Image (cartoon, rainbow, N blue to C red; front, side, top):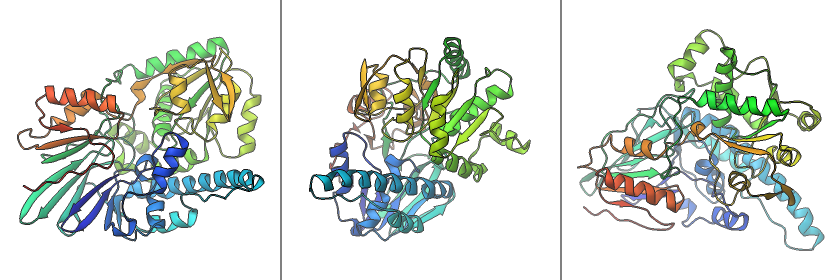
Length: 451
């Protein structure tokens, strides 16, 4: 969440939910560091909850302006934000039952489905490459970020007091040659560059060989007679993973194992993916043209109901269960972890980023015991990490993208959206590559450009 003040107008870049320790996260998400009604417009890079998830709370607190995003992002938000509100309402209902018993004050969700309805009506869908004036003296255009369906790198042209500046905002930057989506597009030269740094200190495994590494993990688990439990974000990550499984199945390489996608949100999201082929790369479009569904094949079954989900516990023999949430902080994945984490025959397959203070991070760190639903569980299952599936650019890819800009014109680079150690390592690499004046702002920092 980044605030631009230009010509007396206030434009917000993204408005995501902070994820971390529960109490801290709730307070940070509930209370904005500004008056929500003072915001003139929001520019949204993509649909993921850490970028779009607090928009309904912004609207609830008085924001009435337009939210500019790609059409695919608009349609995905229509699914994701309702799901987020539903989960909050359900969680608050449970918490209030406990508070009522203790005669303590009841709590409210950050926002409700009614707030989401108002929010979605304020989203304005625009095309990649289309120039739109979002406020007086502020014009934006989107380039494909290649991170998730509809994700965008934003180019912001500003005119203030007779001076022109160009600001670039990465949102989340994707990677070249990833399944389904087109590669990230350069946005040209900018004066100010605001870049994510999620994997600023890490170079991912090469995408080449991704399929074989996955096959090795699947076969090892089958040989042990175990199950593969795959935590996955419902939007983007699940579809990319299914696409890889589809291509393996299409070429006859995928071992005979039933696959279940246990996430109603994933089912709904996949339908939105099918509505936006304009975001697909050439390989995916070739499947579509041949009338093949890259998100579904014979041995794949989508699970919607709770009853069907519970029946997966009774399955004997190897199978794969893909479920949300991606960081194991809620959703049906908790149910499957609780039932399978203590069996050494099983594998927990990690294909995405796990933030600090999440159950997913504790599993990645292979802590000997973790809590699920408040109960301790020994971590005996194998933990396999395939970071080649990451949809975030790694350190080398972030540096390479910045190198597409004229460094002599780049006056300032800000590294955001990453743990401090990751941002620091990226800052060092950018400096070594000739990028000058790299800063890592802290929450609440303000920078003024007067010349």
